[in-house]
Image (tube, rainbow, N blue to C red; front, side):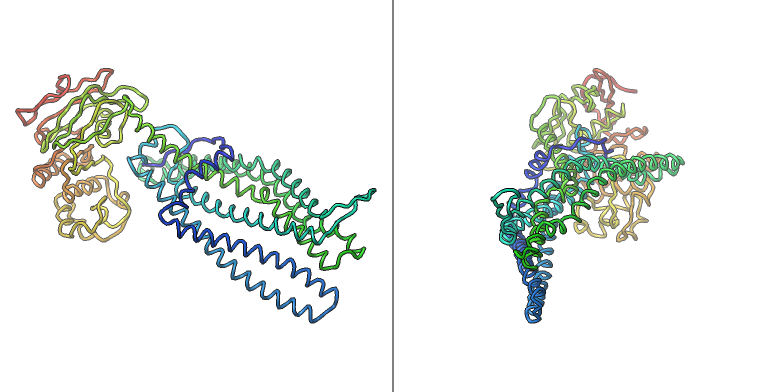
Length: 600
C-alpha cells in the first residue's frame, strides 16, 4: 500500500505543549531496562561538558598571561605560555573526541529505543493499517519514524548539551568579567557601577535575543510549511514507483511528470518563503556576531589607555564579554535548530497520539464496533454481525454464521460486503457491530488478492512471516511444486524485488505456496487466484483439498465454476437492510445462515 498522502500545512503546537508531549513519550528511555548504562553515559556526557567549560576558562586565564608576557616583552614567560597552550590544546582535542563519541552514542541509542517502541506500537493490533481510517495529523508514519525521530533525538541531545554548556560558561565568565573589568564611574556622578561589563553583556545579549526572536518567528512557520510540501513530493514519487507498471501500461508518464513539477513548485515556493525568513535573521546575526568581539574592546579601551588595565586584562575582558554574550545568546543562536526540533518532535508525538486514539476507541467497547473473541471450540462463529463503512453507511446486518472445523465455504456477492467481511474476520475492519468468535489456539492464514512479497531471498519470501530456518529445502521445493511454480526452486537463495520482477499470477502462486508450506488450520482467501485461468484455479483447489484435507476454508471469489469444491455457498447483498443467503452446494446438511434469499 502506498503511504498515506500528507495533509496540508498544520499549525505548529505551542512550544511548551510540544516539549511536554515529547517528554512523556521519549524520556522513559532513561528509565528503561538499560537505565544504569544510560545513566552512566549521561553522567559522563555531563562531566565531559564541564571539562570543556573548564578548559575554556583556563584558556581565558592563559590569554591574559600570554598578552601580559607580550606586553612585558619577556621571552621566558612567552615560551612558558606556549607550553601551557600546547597542554590545553592536547587536552581539548582528547576531551572533544571522547565527548563526541559519548554524544553520538546517546543520540543513536535513544533513537534506537524510541524507534523500536514506535515501530512495535505501529505494527501491533494492525495499527499501521487502521491509522489510515482515522482523522488526525499522522500522515507518512514511515517518514515520521525514520526521519523525524532521528531529527528529534539528535537535536534534543545537541540542544541540551549546548544549553548546559552555555549556562556553565555564562556562570563562569560572569565572575571572570566582573573581576577583570572592575568598576566604571557613572558620567556626571560619584557613583560607580561594579562589574559594568557584565551588565553591558546582558544588555547586548538581551537586545540581540529580542530582535532575533522577532525576526526569527516567521522561520518556524516557513520550516513547517516546507516540511509539509517536501512530504507531498516524496509521497508522489513513492506512489509512482510503487505503481510503475500501471503507469507505464497506461502511458501516464506525462501526467506524473506534470504532477511532480507542480509539487516541486510548491517545494520551491516553500523554500523561497524559508529563504525570506532566513534573510532577516541571518543579516542580523551577521552584524551581531561581527560586532561582538569589537564592542567590548571599544568599551574597555579607556581603562587600558588610563593604565587601569594591562593588555592581558583588556584581551581577557574582551574574550570574557564575548563568551558571556554568546552564552546569553543561546536562544537566538539555536532558533533554527529549535524550530526544526519542534517540527519533527511534533510529528512524532502526533503519530503516537493517533495510535493512542486507536487504543482509546478499542478500550471503550463501543456498540458500533465489532467485538473479536476466542472460543475453545474448533469453529468460527459470527453472531449478529453487522458491517458498516468507516463513514457509517450500512453494508450488512445481523449475520449469524457457524463454520465448523474442516468446512469449506464459498462467499460471493457484493464486492464491498465480501471484502469487508474478509477484513473483519482478520481484525482489520472494526466498523459495525456484533461479535466474531475465532477458534482459539489454531493457526489462521489470510491471503489477500495482492500478496506481499518482501525484498529478500526467495526462501525468506516463501517462509514469510516465519523465519527461513523453520523449514527444510525439501519442504520448500514441495510447496513450490504444489503451487505449480517448481521452476523457481533453483532460485531459493536469490534476492530480488519479487513484487516487480514476477507477474501477478506467479505472485499469487507464490502466496498459495506458503499455504502448502505452513499448513494452517484455517485459511481465508480474498480473490487469491483471480489472475489464474479457470483450469489453474481448479488445480490449486484440488491440491489444497489433497494436501490439507482437514483445512477449514473460507474463500471470497468472484469467478464461478468452482462451487463443487465447497460445502456451502453464501451470497451477501448490500442494502440498507442487507439480505444474506446460504446455498447448499455439496453438503446435504448445509445450514442456512441469516435471512434466506438464494442468489442464482
